[in-house]
Length: 173
Image (tube, rainbow, N blue to C red; front, side, top):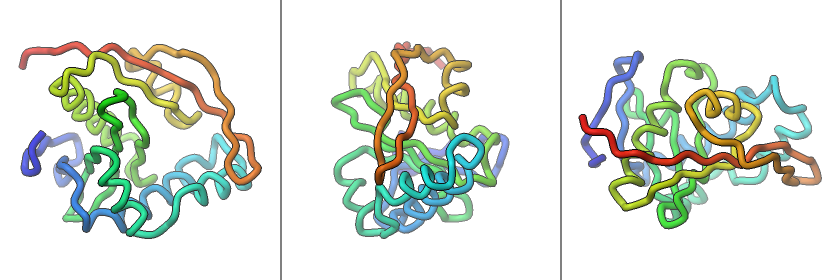
């Protein structure tokens, strides 16, 4: 996917592209609200607070992450409303977050499709993720394989997640 390449899901104003430095502040907000609001039905308030505090709510931190990970964003009216971070050599999704009020519109799915294509172009044949309870069932329905449950600690709070993987297959379009 090039910087200017876009795709049109059910929300016509959403475009997909490589992250830019100016997206970092929006990424911080998407992350915070996705955890605090989007994960509210699966995790306690204490767990969500600990999770949200694991990464700074500052643009500089997210800009630095853009240097570490290939970051693709979903943009609406020039603002980042979702993003995915990829550790390309490891074939791993580091993070995937969408603004909570936009959940269920295919934004996360489309980000994953672009990520899978990106990894395939880099010669990666398998994608992995440590998925939260919020994402876990959706990925299983999309053909991901469950490699087992994990528990991680954030700020003294235990958080359940699942290690998943999927084989990548090139599809001619």
